[in-house]
View 1 (cartoon, chains in turn cyan, purple):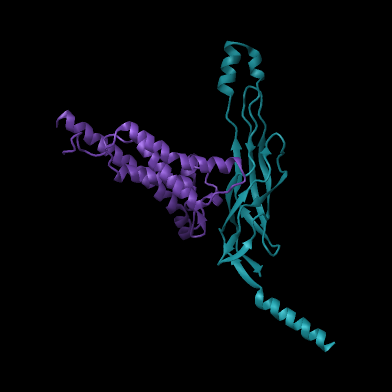
View 2 (cartoon, one colour; view 1 turned 45 degrees about the horizontal axis):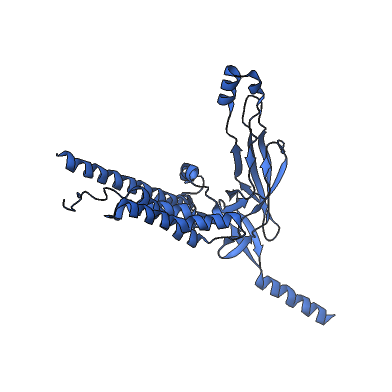
Length: 162
Length: 158
C-alpha cells in the first residue's frame, strides 16, 4: 500500500513538474483554413461549420493550439445566386478553437465571399435580345478548400501544456 | 529646359516614384503586425484590408513578425521589394531584347515553384518563396522598366 502511494506521489509530482500553464493573451493570431468547399448553395443561415488550424500556435515556444485542431464557426450569411444574374454571397463567422488541453478558446474572424454580379449583362441581354435571359441565375458564394484567414483570440486563456 | 533633357528627367522621376511606392508597400506590409502588437487589435487591420486586394495573405505563407503574419505573403513581399529595389537602384544600359530575355529568365523559377506547389503535394518554404519572389520582382523590372534608367542620355553623359 505504501509503495503504491509512493509511486502515485512520484507520478503526480513528475507530471506537475513537466506540465505548465501558458497564458494565451487576448488578440493572439490563429491561422484558420477551410477543410471543405463552403458554398451558399449548400449551407443555411446558422448552420455549424468546422474548419481547422493551419499551423501550430506557439506562445513562448510552447505549442498551445496544434495544427489541425478543429475550429468551430457558423454561417452568418448565405445567399444563393438568384434570377436576373443576382450574385450569391456567404459569410462564415469563426467562434471557437480547441487548445491542446481541450480548452475552448473564443475567437473572432470570418471567411467571406461574394460572387461576381451578372445583373448588368443579364438585364442588357434580356431587354435587347431575349427576355428569357432574365432567367439566368447568378453564381453562388463559394469559399474554396484550403482558404486561410487570421482569427484572433477573444480574452485571456490559461492552457495546460506538457 | 530642352525637350531632350526633360524627357529623361521625367522618366527618372517616374521610375524613382514608382520604386518608392513598391518599396513602401513592402514596408507597409511589415508595419501591420508591428502596429497591431503595439496598439492591439484592431489597429493595423486597415493595412491588412488595404493590401488584401493584391495578395491572398495566407498566414502560413507569410513571414511572422511579433507573433503575427505580415500583410503580404512572403512571395508578394519579395516581389514588390525586388521590383522596387530594381526601380530605385539598378541602372541598366542593356538593349531591350536582352533585358526582356533576362526578365523572363528571372521570373521562371518563381512560376515553376508556384505551379509545382499547386499541382503536387510539394509545399514550398517561406524563405524560398521570398527569394524566388524577389528574383521575380527583379525580372519584372527588367521586362517592363529597362529604359530611361537614369537621367543620362544614350552616350551616358548628364
